Image (cartoon, rainbow, N blue to C red; front, side):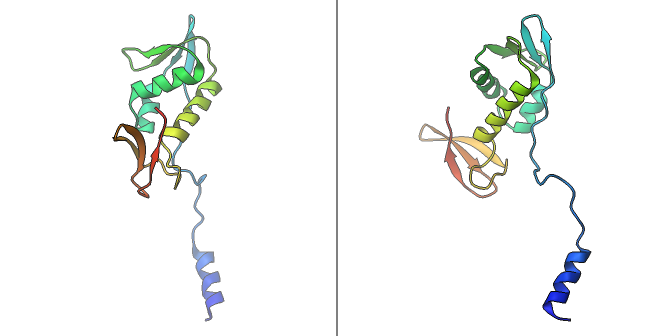
Length: 134
């Protein structure tokens, strides 16, 4: 059996892998209006998935959405104003792009660390270190 036949055989016996190819996804925000505030019900789940400090994430959301907010005693984010799920989802995608996903290899296996006062994103997968904004 020559190389081409072996390759064809190997490819025909290789199982197809289902999936989008992405192993990292941020949960869709579960939001509802409560008076003049938007309550982000699954904020804690999202923060856990991002692997980042909840105060840092809520501060980023406030800046992106141009509003004020806080985390209530139940771990939900309460944002002043009315925001659609899609707007919060876009802000979370921007956060993940800047503070979670490695700019070199694209994997989410990163940690935020300080080095000589600068905030860096250190990738545990490829070893890259990239500066990020505060």
